[in-house]
Image (tube, rainbow, N blue to C red):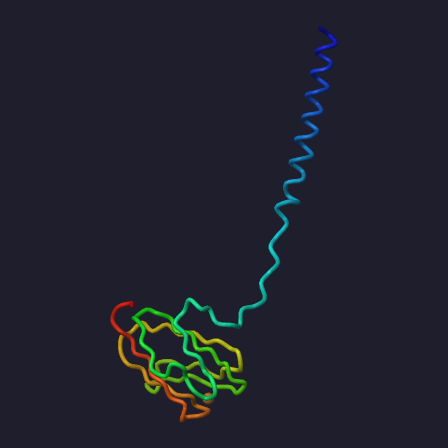
Length: 131
Ligand SMILES: [Cu+2]
């Protein structure tokens, strides 16, 4: 009987050592973090998007619902701006590949232009409810 109890004690301490070494491994496993994504400069395709391509807003007439966020993506190499004719929004200068977002909370029609190239014009029409 004494032999068996020695055996059990040995077994128990072996199990304890295994458990401790496993638990000490756990933080290492958790510290494996996914590689950080590069900073997003491209558009999120889920958002309503107006592209600026070749000195034009595409689409130049864009309909959304109130509360929606429109992203403007400058795909030209030239800087452009998106400025409301009523002054309600102003993107400031947007360099090539930059994205600017604006949330339209109020229904209405919002004509805008590029202050650098005033012949560039577009309109956002905001309906009362979401699409
Ligand atoms: Cu422009």
